[in-house]
Length: 283
Ligand SMILES: NC(=O)c1ccc[n+]([C@@H]2O[C@H](COP(=O)([O-])OP(=O)(O)OC[C@H]3O[C@@H](n4cnc5c(N)ncnc54)[C@H](OP(=O)(O)O)[C@@H]3O)[C@@H](O)[C@H]2O)c1
Image 1 (cartoon, rainbow, N blue to C red):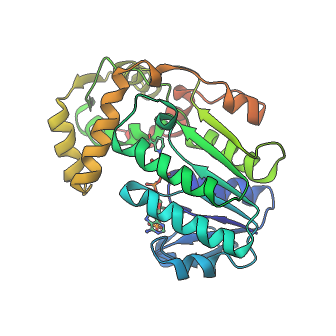
Image 2: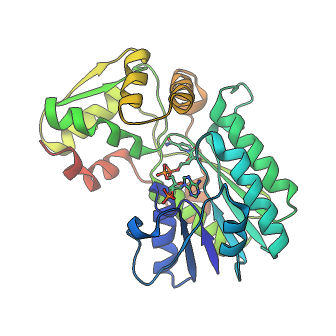
């Protein structure tokens, strides 16, 4: 049995769908099974990664774990899972980490949280694989409201380029790491096929949507205020803004070979992602 945490989120849901399509036994963890929206044939368990008893119960008969944690709780939740997994005989953990972990110069909160989480997983003694994606293509969904209402992409750090990656490709690497051989003790930095600035992403979106869009660079303070207006906690908003600022560094614009090396096919392009999500940007 494979336990998937973060199963209702962007990457975790894609991992559930892939494992299900392959006929693998999956158990999905969520704090709210009633609104999880997972397929009816998936075993869904209620659990909070902050509650060790919940995790121990969810790990019954589990031999592999896809570990997704988020926000300032990453170190504590990863440590909780790692300890319970070691006690219950789990034989493999695939942790969703952050590409910035690999950047020695990164001192902002999110890579620091993931470094601590990775350390807890390694110290558990359970064979592990670390997935370290750069920015997600799906972050562009934050632009959808302004695109729908004003044909405008509002985003800070216009000079920054990120080799954004599709959540489906992260899930494909996760699935292979969970069920394939040779991934133990490996850390994969995951990128898409091309580094893009927000302006270049705007051009691609406009072509796909078939209508002109403009890119307007916002001040970081405006972008932070927008996060708060979406209900993001101030500590998390500061961490996200610190991470976004690093788009101006060269690290995030490097294209990495791991998606193709692990899955045998090239990573999906932002254009393919945009075609799949065009309805969310429709006027
Ligand atoms: N966005 C990026 O560009 C990017 C880039 C690199 C790495 N990452 C990393 O990717 C991860 C986020 O992935 P995502 O965007 O797929 O997540 P997401 O869509 O934000 O979903 C978060 C998931 O975490 C679960 N969750 C939150 N608190 C929980 C708790 N206390 N107990 C149990 N489950 C809990 C939620 O489940 P319920 O609400 O159903 O309980 C939900 O399924 C983070 O670790 C982030 O650092 C993101």
